[in-house]
Length: 171
Image (cartoon, rainbow, N blue to C red; front, side, top):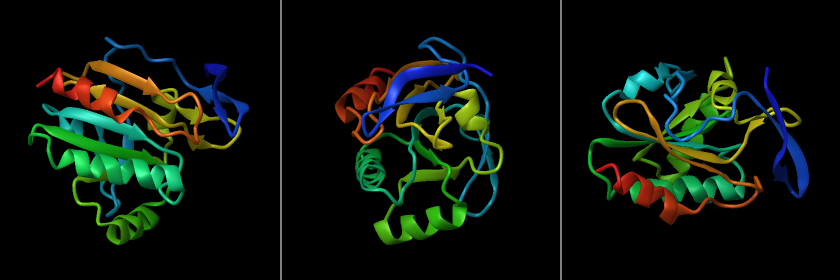
């Protein structure tokens, strides 16, 4: 298992990421998560679409809440061939409750609680916290990673404009 120390911080403290360091141009690794109905969802579940994959620590935290609401708003303006997936280790029941309370209807929330295969395959599982780091991947319709934004401080928001520019460059 690859361990990468110090590439991110949580509240200023260096953290260790588990898994490979993916690069733009890599084939996006598969993963197995579940949606809010416990239905299995993999990368190929949205094959042929541009996938914006937003990894977050927990929807029940202020920054993750803000980020997912923002991507939900932005998704409304994107074409049908773009899907926004938010993946956390929150239980599917908590994700469903949160989405209902937040009015999330465009972002698909997925839980990596069973296998942690997304976190480990994408290199975003934080060893010390056993949570996902804040990272955005844009995967094209052919399954190739075209953009990665690993947010250096887990408690900071991503650069939304840069993510949207990466998506628009694929349209």
